[in-house]
Length: 85
Image 1: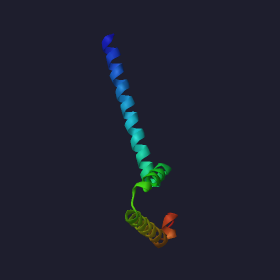
Image 2: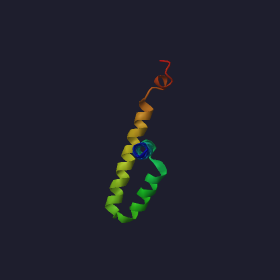
Image 3: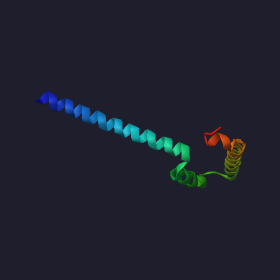
Image 4: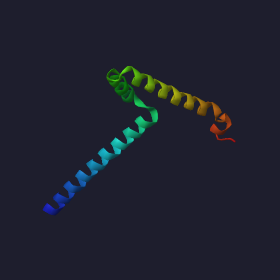
């Protein structure tokens, strides 16, 4: 009887651990893909700690990345997106 109870406890703990890991990975992937509002909040909160030169450098990098993303979106063929080509 004690062996069954101990085995059940171990399986339950392992299941909870796996569920926690799964949720963490899923949330982190979603934030990485979409950016997430939390990432925006964190960037805004740390903005106060940067001096003027560093803020300008961050702004240049963000604008450059936005430009690259716009180029990628404009250069892709819309025909390939619908899956009929």
